[in-house]
Image (cartoon, rainbow, N blue to C red; front, side, top):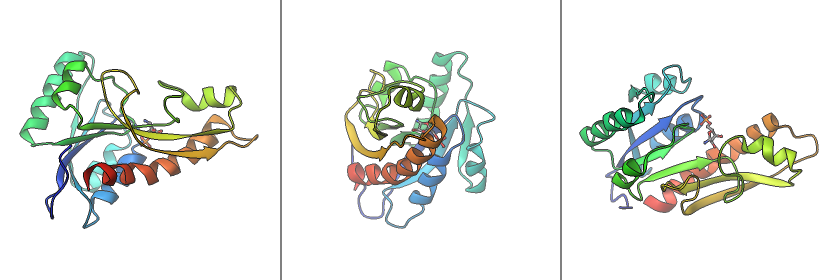
Length: 192
Ligand code: GRF
């Protein structure tokens, strides 16, 4: 990945599907003078994604793309990314699986936040599975996106302790706080 140089920020797109707390946090991060990224586009596969409010509040272009036909959806996104000269993509709670074709087009330029300590608990419902297994620690991982789900090179991780009274919901809350710390830190690590 090309590093950011001087005050030239890397044109970034954020992909979301839901509440967008990571998006909100990344917008705050991108607004710092010395941040390596500038968020130029927000893509959502859900028209009702709560996180879209942050696009409106911050005057960032948003695009809602229907994924009922993933091939067409990806084609639309790719042409938009090219039009907006996007160089870097952060997935933040984006619930679609991107195709090999798409990922290859942005090889080494897509990263994701996953709510577990990868390689443990790839896929969905991580917190439920962690609690069911009586694990003592969990956490979150920022990793590169490759065609194999949740398996790309790890950029950064942070752990949390699980207490006996934790539920999937309380664990999610604890881990989200750590996500908001490591997503910007991971971006700095690879782009600064
Ligand atoms: C986070 O738990 C993230 O790890 C996962 O999806 C969730 C997104 O949360 N990929 P938010 O929409 O950023 O609040």
